[in-house]
Length: 198
Image (cartoon, rainbow, N blue to C red; front, top):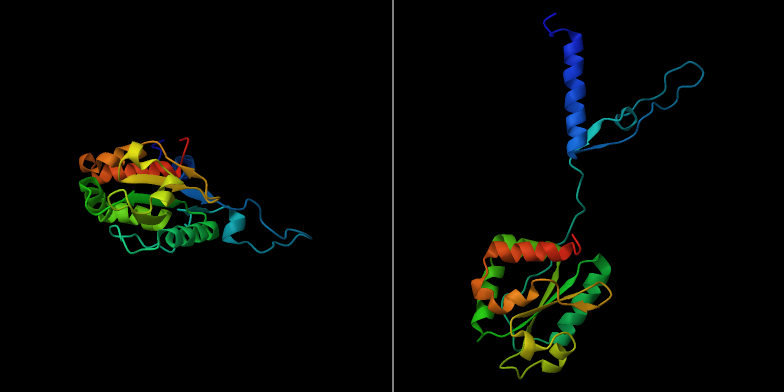
C-alpha cells in the first residue's frame, strides 16, 4: 500500500482536526443530531454536527477617549466621577494619571500615549483621566486620596477597580522616569495590569 487511499485521507483529516482543537484556535459546538425518533432523520445543523468555528468573536467595545496632556482648567473630581460611572457600566478599570505639563517625564508619557499601540490599549481597555497637579499646588487634596505624590513623583499612575478601590499596580513606579521607557514597555505594563496575578 502506498498510503494514498481513503484511509490516508481520513487519517489526515482526523490529524488536522485534532491539531486545530488542541491548538485552541477553534470552538466546537454541539455533538448530537436532533430529532432521530420514529425511524426518521431529524434536522441537522452546523451546531449539531459539532463543526469547528475558528476564532471566537470578541464583544464590541466602544473606545474611550484618551486624554492628550494635562488640562489645568479641567474639573478633575468630575472627570474621575464620570470615569468611575463608565467603569461601573462596562467593567473597564479607571487609570488616573497625576502629572503636569512642565514635567519632562509627564511630557514623555504624553508622547508615549500617542503611540498608536499604546493609545489603542488605553482606548479599548481603560477609562483614562489625567489630573494636572501644577507645581504640586493643584488637585493635591484629590491626589492625596490615591497616592503620595512627594514620595512617588510624577507622573504617578493609579488604577481604580470597578468598585473604586485604588491600587498602585506592579511597575507603576517606573512612570516617574517615563523618559527611560519605550512604547513597548508601556504597552506591556498596561496589558499586564489588566490580568493581575498572571
